[in-house]
Length: 109
Length: 246
Image (cartoon, rainbow over all chains, first blue to last red; front, side, top):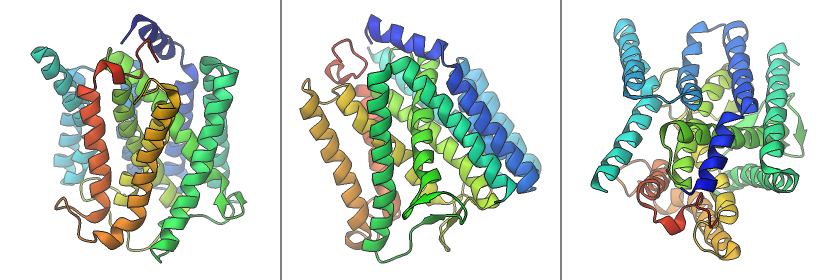
């Protein structure tokens, strides 16, 4: 990526309060509807994959964060005996695999 | 109108206006107007195509907007706006993730991350939307076996594919992904876009059992993601949309 494009990318990432605000509004509205309209607070867990990706847009997520996320979903699945909760970790797995792919390519030069 | 509908539509409108403001501020008025108009046309085309495909396949549409939501003819305004919203938000979130965790990667990486973000938006919105009754899915939809809360697999396939195709087509024009000529690049993008859409219309009849040992509806998105991932990792410099030449 060239210097000009890199600068554009960084500018976009550092001054994107509207994107963060729009994500926040969407998550808040969905949370209110889950709790007060659908009356199923457990469904708040459906916001978890998006929550991780919004977090990843705000700060770099390293292997520890991704593993912690997968472990948390795994623990939830084990505690509730609902193995589908492990599926909520799919963005962490995808980001991890993408990072491994880039690292392997960089190592091969 | 139910209070849940009002809250959802008001929240969506405010969030959408924030995205329009961001687009205007970062792209400039000329490109922002072009981009938003393009998204509007692409979203309307998408909704018409969904209805058209259902008619060709002689089956009801996968989903219909709930009664009481704003419509122009057969088009659900909230759904069209929703596609624009999801496309802008997921592309920009993808760019932010890319700049934090995958610096130096190409525009295909942005599109790959965008598909991931769209799937997460889809999951959150669909799970709530179905429960609150914002739209109604057709009966007998297969549900995801690996995600909780009865999420239709059609949503998991369609949302990321739709936003990625819409944004991918825009990128072929804006960043000249496949040729230094903007028009040649756009033609390649258009050919890919319409081939994908056409295959969706006919594959149920031509390939009912699937040719990748998976169900017929999942194979096309999987090929799309495979191509995108390959380009993310191995695209030559001349195909980088974020290069200075673009």
